[in-house]
Length: 145
Ligand SMILES: CC(C)(COP(=O)(O)OP(=O)(O)OC[C@H]1O[C@@H](n2cnc3c(N)ncnc32)[C@H](O)[C@@H]1OP(=O)(O)O)[C@@H](O)C(=O)NCCC(=O)NCCS
Image (cartoon, rainbow, N blue to C red):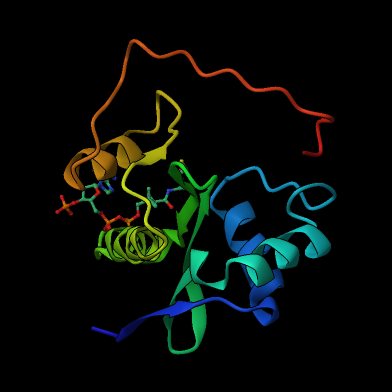
C-alpha cells in the first residue's frame, strides 16, 4: 500500500484544496469564505488547523478545524474517492482534534447532512455524540459566504 502522509497544509496547497472539495461534492465558496484571500487569512491565523493527507505528493484528503475559543469545530473533511476506506478521514480528524486540544479546546463539534451516511458513521466511530433534538440555524451575509 502507498504511504499516506498527514501534514499541515500551507498557502501553496490552496488550489488543490478547492479542487479536492469540489470533486468530493462539497460546496466550496471560492468567491466568499473560500477565496484565496479569506482561506489564507484563516490559515495564517491558525496554521495548525489545516490538515491534509498526501500520497506520493498528491493531496488526497483535507480537513479544516476552527475555534471560537470556547468550542472547536471540524469542517469540510474530504477524501478523494479512490482513496476512501483506508482510514485517511480518521487520521485527519485525529490530527485536527489534537490541534484543537493544544489550544485548550475540550468540546469539538461537527455538522453532517442527514443523508451523509459515511460521515455520520465516521463521527460515531470517533466517539462523537449525535444530537437529534438540536436544530441548526445560520445567518449569511450572502450566498458566497
Ligand atoms: C466521509 C469521508 C471523508 C470518509 O473518508 P474515508 O477516508 O473513506 O474514511 P475512513 O476510511 O477514515 O473511515 C473511518 C470510519 O468512518 C466510517 N465510514 C467511512 N466511510 C464509510 C462508508 N462509506 N460507509 C459507512 N461507514 C463509513 C467507518 O466507521 C470507518 O471505520 P471502519 O473502516 O473501521 O469501519 C469520505 O467518504 C468523503 O470524502 N466523503 C465526501 C465528502 C463529505 O461528505 N464530507 C463530509 C462533509 S460533512
